[in-house]
Length: 312
Picture 1: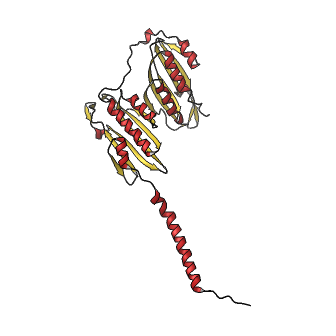
Picture 2: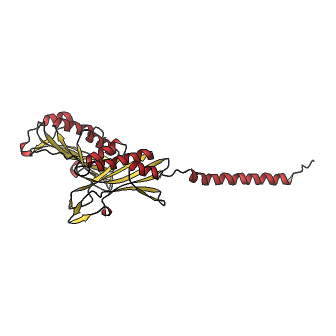
C-alpha cells in the first residue's frame, strides 16, 4: 500500500483562500445593495418644482413646500396662515427602481379644474378633492395628488402644478356662470336618453338619470337605494343647460373617469369616499357642467364607458 504525502502548508493556504473568498462574497452581498441604492437628487427636484425642500433622512423623504402667502383667508373670523394648513407640498421617496410622490395643493374654487388638468396631463394622479375648513372665506379646497415613476418627470409635473397655482391666483382662474331656473326647463329628455342609452325621470324641471351599482359592507350587499350609484341631473334648454351629479367608481376607474369628464369640460367639485370598510372599495366624484345637453351627455357617456360592473 502506498501512502500519499500531503503538503500541509498548501492545504492551509488553500483553506485560507476559500475562507477569504467566502467572506468577500458575503460582504459584497450585504453591502453592495446599500452602496448601489440611488438617492434622490434633491437639488434637481428643487429646480424642477421651483420650491425649496427639506430632507428627512430617517424616512428617506424629500418634501418641497409652496406656502400660499398670496391668500387672505379667514375662518370663522380667524386669519389663516400657511403654518395653519395653507401650504401646498409634494413629498418624494425612492421605492426600488422608481420614485414615489404624494402631495396636497391649496387651491381656490376657480383654480381647481385648471390645476387638475395640469396634473392629469403630466402623468400625475388626482386622489382626492375636498375641504379642510368650515366657514372659510374665500372658500379653499385641497387637491391631493400622487404618482410613481421617473423622478425627473414627477418633479417636472409637480413644478407645472405649482406654476399653474401661481398663474391662476388672484382671481385669474375660471368659474362657469349661467342663469338658469329649473321651473323654466325646456330640454328634450329624448336627446339625452339617445346618447346615454337609458331613461330617466323629470321632476320639477330636473331631468335625472341614475345608474345603480353594488358593493358589500360587512359581507352584506348594498346597491342603488343605499347610495351606491352614479347620477346626472339636467336643467335648462337643449342649447344651454347645467348638469350636476355623482360618479361611484372602483379605485382603478378614478383616473379614467376624471380624464373623460375633464375632456368634456365638466368640472370636478369633489373626490372622496362615502363609506368605510366596503369591498370592493368605492370612491365618489361630484361634478358640475355647463353646455348643451348633447355635449354634456356625451361627456358623461364617455366617463361611464371607462367603468366595469362591480364584482358580485
